[in-house]
Length: 336
Image 1 (cartoon, rainbow, N blue to C red):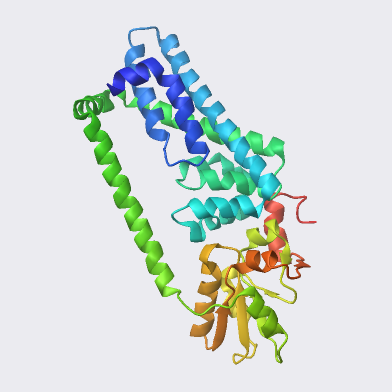
Image 2 (spheres, one colour; image 1 turned 120 degrees about the vertical axis):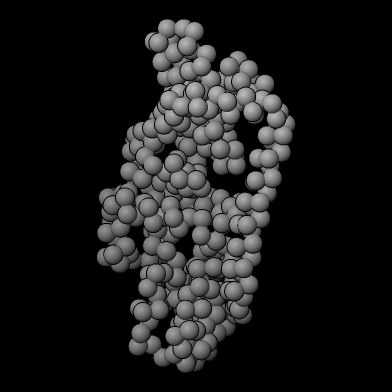
């Protein structure tokens, strides 16, 4: 059944599967590329070698084109809506509390070249593309590196399927024999995986359960003497995408935030904000600060977005030299 389906409709299936994955749906396309490579090679044995190679090349071409269609849409949305589209993607992610962090760290380290490999890293491909748009990567650079990455990814999938066609053919026979049982096994595996991830997330939320203050409460606190010290705990890439801060906020590097606060009065009140779902980054920093003896630390409920939505003032953020260096690696003209 599966063999006949791919043999007759391989290219449309590849295009649809790759497009859906690039749009962010949980339908991995690599298995389809592998199976298409296997079946194309098995069927092509009855034809000339060049005819089989042309068929495999067509699969790679279709997969690459489909990936570019979906990626261009996310690139445009990242360029147009910036941090809002990243927030939307995170709200759909099982690991939404840290979903942009890995993409951001890779971009800061390797720049736009990271698009060559992100399709090989589950969960990063869909996020890396809008991040590229949000930080201002030029369209020409994006198209070049994304096309190279998509073509390399598709080639690896199809080539592995073709290379190990004889090994995989018995597995196809078992899948055909199982029929819908294969889908049942895949569904059970997916449910177990999602359950494990949700449990991890729930455990993290329980650990970081602590009192929070909202934007209105923070304004009232700032009018008191002495006012609380406000900490901007966003990651560097997020600050570069949205270069504003709550007036007077102390900008710290998320990874070494507590060390940067040495010398401050530990008895003062502190309010920590980020721009991530459930204030996880802010709560993690608050947890570290309490461990170091800061007695009155509160995450800002809703983070920077809640402050902005309430209509309170923001001030431009001047990038520090470390951040500027990281930004220059990503997009040389964006850190001016």
